[in-house]
Length: 499
Ligand SMILES: Nc1ncnc2c1ncn2[C@@H]1O[C@H](COP(=O)(O)OP(=O)(O)OP(=O)(O)O)[C@@H](O)[C@H]1O
Ligand SMILES: [Mg+2]
Image 1 (tube, rainbow, N blue to C red):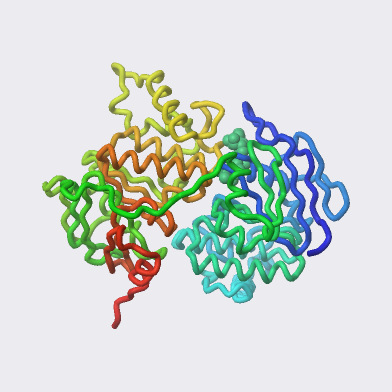
Image 2: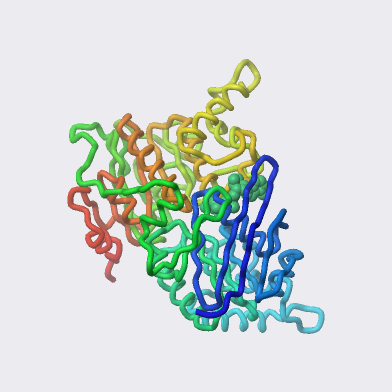
C-alpha cells in the first residue's frame, strides 16, 4: 500500500436542523480500498459530497497529496482526479450510453458532435471494463443494474482518476455483476488509485476492502484493518450493539391458514405462465437472478403493467386488476424496488408521503386532518426508527435508507392485507434491517400476507415461510423453508428452458 493521498480532518457540516457531520475524518492511501460504513444517515454520502465539491464544508481540512486544498465545485474535484459514482443514479434517461458518458466533453467534428468517434470511444471503454453494453442504447431502456455499470464506467472514463468514490455501488447489482465490479476494483487498485467504498453489505467488506472507517451520527468512530477485524466488531461499532440474524428453520404460517391470493397462468411480455398462491399470515419469498421476471410478475398483481392472460383470485373471488387503484382497493400494497421512480415524491414532506395512499381516511370535512396525519407519520418514524429532524422534512433530504423507511410506513398505514415488498432492505443498514425483519415477521403474525422479492439470499432464508424461484419469466421451483438451502435455490434460479 502506498502513500496517504487523502486526509480529511475535523469536517463539519450543518443542514437546517441537522448537524450532519461533526468531526468527521477519513484517510485514504494510494492503491487501497477504504470502506466507509455507518448506519443510514450517519453522514457517509454527505462527507463524500464535500470531497467531490458538491457541498461546501462548514469546518475542518482536506489534505490531498500532502497539500491542503479547497474544492470549488464538482468540476474542480474532477480536475483534481476525484471522481464519484453516486448512490442515486444520475444518468439522463432519454440519452444514449455514449451521450451520457461524454456529456460536456464530446468529441467534435467541426461544429457537431462526432457520434461515430463518441461511440467508438465508449465501446473501447466498455471493452476495457469487460462490459457488454452497446454505446447506442438509450439509458431509459436499461435495467437499474446496467445503468449502475454505466455510471461506474463514466467515472472511470476520466483518465486522471486518482481517487474513486463508490457510494453503495453493489446495492443494485447481482452477484455476478458484483464479481465483475470487484475484478475491476482489483485492477484499478494496482494502478495506484485510492478507492472509497460505501456499502451496507457486510459480507463484501472482507472480500474487497483493506481498511474500514466507521462513522456514527456524523462522527468519526474508528479505522480498522480489515484483515485484523471481524464483521460483528464492525457492526458493533456502527450501531452500538451486536446483531445476529438466524435463518428460519420452519414455516411460521399455520398449516390450515386459508389461501388469500391465487394467481393462475399469468402471462405478459416478460411473464410466462406464472402460477402461485399465498396464504393468510404467510411470507412468500421470491428468488431469482435479476431479470428473472419477479418484479414484472408482481407488477401484474398491482395493475402497474397490462396482463395478456391469467386469473387472480382474492379470498376465492376472481378480481380484475387494471390499475394500481384497483389493486389498492383489493388490499394489495406494492413497495417498489425503485423508490425514486415509483415510490416517493421527493419534494414532499415525510408526512405527505406517508399519508398519500391513505388520504381517503384522513379527511375532516373537506380538509385533510393534518394533526392526525402528523401523528401517524410520527408513529412510524418511531416504530421503524426513521432518522429525520421532523415529520415536515422533505423526503429528498433524507439519506437513502431512511427514504426506504418512508416507503414502508406509507404502505403500513394504508393497512393492506397483502403487501408486496420488492427488495425491501436495499441500501438499508444492518441495524434497521433487523428492525424491518421484525416488523415484517410481526405483520405476518398479525395476519397480513406478504410477498417478498429479494436478491439477498440470507434475507430470503431468514424471513420466508416458502420460496418460489423464477428464471427467465417462469416459475422454476418452489421450496418450503424447512428444506431450503442456497444451493437448491440457485439450481432452480438457473434452470433455463432448453430449446
Ligand atoms: N441536502 C440535505 N438537506 C438536509 N439534510 C440533509 C441533506 N443531505 C443529507 N442530510 C441529512 O444529513 C444526514 C446524513 O445523511 P447522509 O445522506 O450523508 O447519510 P448516509 O450515511 O449516506 O446514509 P445512507 O446509508 O442511508 O445512504 C441525514 O440526517 C440526512 O437527513
Ligand atoms: Mg448515503
